[in-house]
Length: 355
Image (cartoon, rainbow, N blue to C red; front, side):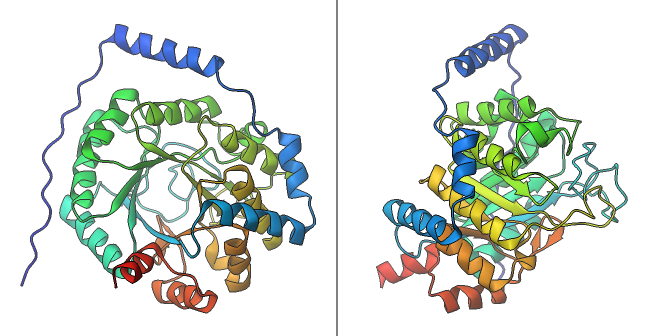
């Protein structure tokens, strides 16, 4: 028997008057100036990264156990709902129009297509569904369409997340009204190294979007990428930036660069796998209540390194054979890995509690 698809009502955005918009920006700037003192300096984070590995893992595991229940691993699926054609020049991204990577620009997916993908993800065990669109900054009409996707996916009982580029305050509010739980907008790297990676969007642009998302009452998903040629101090700088956000993100994805042919970073030296483990551990120590997510690049890590990452405090993975347009371990491989490690997912834990 065919199943009815969740229906979504059209959403219409109302732009704020120019005066109201100016007042909101001034208020946000004043709040930023009055922010709390730094919780973590770059030097303090770097000192953690330089600890003997086993000492660092022991410390991270203690922090993790103090703040999270045992075996609470969240499975999240990420779908590219609008692929390619992005005007930005982020050196790691195969979806940029600046680079010849073979990724073709596509239109935004229809609601029924997204719902089918979300239902399949839910049935495979995912509890969170993230929708990514390759825009620099969506237009209001784009946000209206994504809001319909959010409502439909929310109707399946999944947590919802979106990553669409830079957002204005009224756009963030529209997504909140539609039921969006999380918005992803990564800082990518430390501010001192950022200009080596992208120059079509400033670091402050990213911070402004995070502020708009937070002000709308949406939880923040924000992390970065390692293995882009950055120095150890830049890795410490990224963690310090994240940990000093007020409050720090509820969700922190740590990505290992996927070196895509045709991108400027395709020939970057791979990060030492144990240095990646260190990033996970320090993210856990500095942001105890955040979900630390193993994100892009898991295919190249292998099972043993992923096991160390879970020991270091990772408690979420992106689940499914693709992350936007790059490869990811397939569902069965992840199920086998979690079973080997004796880790339970949130869905399995909930089912066990009900039994």
